[in-house]
Image 1: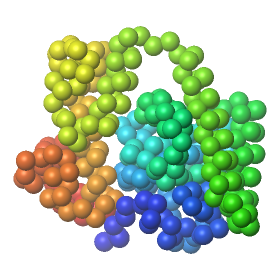
Image 2: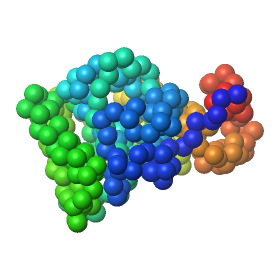
Image 3: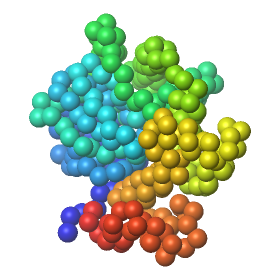
Length: 296
């Protein structure tokens, strides 16, 4: 039987990745094969997992297809993808010639209030639209800062290295905010589309505790029936199906990439008991949680 895929957060990665690629709360690299012989990024993300860090991917060549949450995205040349720390990811496909720059940042990296406010605004956009196409000028600007960062981390000679890194990361952060916000301004959304996006954002943050459509409908001052109608018109799925899909995806990620027992996962997802969780999971996945976990 294959070794189970572990839960990869900042602490576990810090023990694996070449120390020349990390400083403080940041990992930065442009070649996954040169980091550490034991670090198999594509094997790690071949099943649904949560990294527990904010991840930035800047594609230089080829493409990679990733499932973020319940949606699939293709990152191709001159594209930037930002994955939030609470999002679940899974590798779908990667081209043989894929080349990219990676930045992994521990949650809570930014402490300044203005950064926090901007981060909340950006987070709302990123839940549904984690990718953006960069212009040639934007790509050049981002890569210049990336390689300055990478060289600073590898040389590790500055007396105030962490502070220098933090400010370069902050510069990248604001550049990314600008690009994403400008990109979203181009799309004129209907009221129903806005409700759907807010529903998905609210759902992603609360589905473990709140699984009743009525709770979400109250947030929009709508009836559960009308909210589900709006969600169906925009996405082709009813609100109840979105809730179910988030629960199943979370269960799969926890079974794949955490050391929690099935009972603990059942408790984490708010089920009354392990038996209820088991029957619920099998109904939608086709196998029992124990069997699914054993296939890891």
